[in-house]
Image (tube, rainbow, N blue to C red; front, top):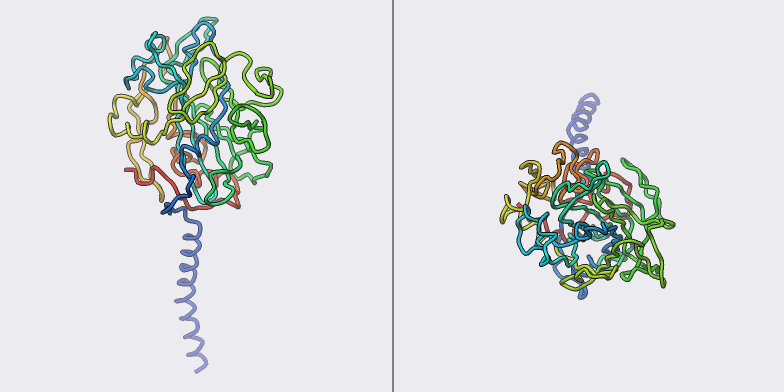
Length: 372
């Protein structure tokens, strides 16, 4: 009888232990799963435009004094058409509407905002052996700002990360006093300067300050002591160039002799993403017709363009790394990243890189969640 009891016990162990392991494994998997639970009712003052403006960058743009139009930030359709092959000519036209604007995408979780900002210049240029060269049309540079919200329903919060496009890679800056444990990427050493919307320092300032170099339009964080950074009357600006400030207006200020201009914020999901399906061969694809799909538990979307279309100029080599990456693929070359994850599933991306103990895995607003 005792042997029979032991046999039954052994059989029970063999049957039930795997079931228990699978059950708790399933529970653990579900607990760590990223999901979307869209809001049913938003707070009264909630809007993505307000959120995007609240954390939009102060841009310090260096300018070519001979051809300043080459370095003015502008709308993709600044010449009132979506033809990308005429922009290097139209940027110098007298009727070019160079009112400044940048594009944004807001994704929200219960604890954070993930905001991507995209800056467009009609022309990328540079010096080669002392000669000015126009390299290619339609230059775009991207950055992402991560904000830890004050509470679940707040549009206010504190900036914790600023991520800058670096070619096809990224640089990430810790703008928080907290030390986040590194998993797969070191933070850059520079400290991000946060200003208010007018360009002044204050306790709860939330606008990262970014230098844009003339020509190639690479992005750099502004740091204290940089000789390009000038403080006058309590306000920061670039010494030689244009200081662009975020505004809530539908149209930015037309460039004039003023070295400080307000820029408009335009919803990327409505103005650039929709054209992916509307006219795929007109605006997008640059060196080739390469497009990528993106699939994970949150997003399933296909045929996403990587580059703007545009002419190669003055002998630009097509086999070089193209810094003209569309916002959908910011961080495309980051080691260990599925291309597109930083834009489409930032919760997953940042949790791959750092230990974020207060990071919710629940998206409450995601404009690309129903993409196909």
